[in-house]
Image 1 (cartoon, protein in one colour):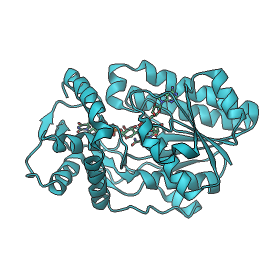
Image 2 (cartoon, helix red, strand yellow):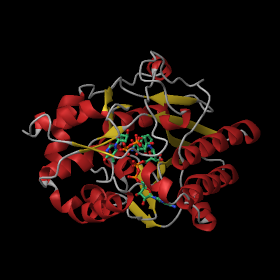
Image 3 (spheres, helix red, strand yellow):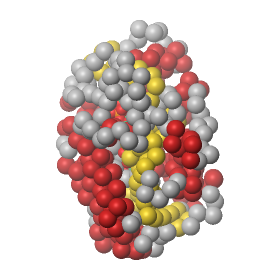
Image 4 (cartoon, helix red, strand yellow):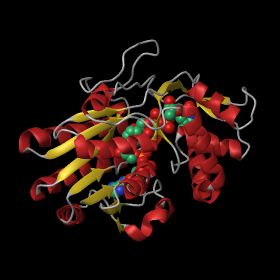
Length: 331
Ligand code: NAD
Ligand code: TDX
């Protein structure tokens, strides 16, 4: 099977390519990636001899058409992905996440291929902290930020192309991922690399917001499972019951990294900050044999800390750029 992986030099996409090489060695993989600030080509060092890499944009209709025609399946990770950046400059989110998805859908339709669209639980908005409810596939979309609105828009385009044109597509909405090769602008790598540099973790607001953490390999195993066992036209929520407040994540990182429990700062909150995300993955668990292999966030975080400690060349330059941006945003 020839698989086109968009955004394959980013966090989840690069881990997907590495995982797919291990788990499905007969797949021929091509990465299409614009190599924005969020990409790191060295994430693919381990597999570079076995894959094709094309530098280009999912918004480039001619390039997308040519690449889709030459593959059987598209796994669409490419996106601008950071909420804070979408509040600062929304346009790249509209362009890549909405227009880019449109170009892929049109090419997949023209050439009668299959696409799996990667999305996020953020399209459903947020839940109250004390609400026992979780998101399911029937929760109405209600996005809060320019980023999540652009992802919800892309999800709706996929659904419309399925209904109107019979497109062979599936969608997955996953909760917050953690693991190796995540950009240092994101919460967990920002705090781990900060602690390694002697900088106290920074919690937005009171640190009470809750995220539902899943190891990136569990997300990618679910994507492989949906490609093979998912029903066409369906949406699947992916999550591993990893709800934690941001404060509890920081306390765990401090403990694992040998720092005192009060060694963090509260900083100004993100505007429109979603309170809580939580995933009910019953549909995925019922319809497929996927089960998370890393349900223990504590041991997953310990491995992630090791990775950032061992791979400082991977993140040092990006760290300076990301913290300069945070200084400007006052966070
Ligand atoms: P990332 O920012 O680490 O990687 C995104 C990649 O897409 C980068 O390599 C970037 O260069 C590439 N890209 C950006 N614009 C492009 C364009 N126009 N054309 C081609 N490539 C382009 O993001 P990530 O965290 O790996 O997220 C991947 C996908 O998973 C996104 O669609 C995101 O919405 C979704 N998702 C992420 C999470 C999470 O916790 N990180 C959770 C659920 C869903
Ligand atoms: O320094 C920080 N301090 C802090 O308290 C940062 C960077 C974040 N936070 C908080 C904000 C969120 O409540 O931590 C939580 C996680 O923040 P992010 O890593 O920015 O993730 P989030 O906004 O939850 O979105 C992530 O999960 C869903 C990904 O970035 C998205 O791409 C994905 O769709």
